Image (cartoon, rainbow, N blue to C red):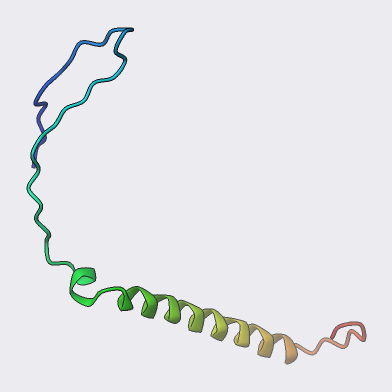
Length: 74
């Protein structure tokens, strides 16, 4: 879709801005978010937390089996 300029106003120091009022149709496309609502976003956040927890668990298990004998390491 191409946009087009509906109106222009010359710029002057007395009025550095101008307003343009138009009627815009309020239509909504059917998107996944509109169909499923906020719970879709919360499921995505929960999935991210689970992935980060799994990554932390994997890093902890590989560092425990790496054979470090450092006595200061807890």
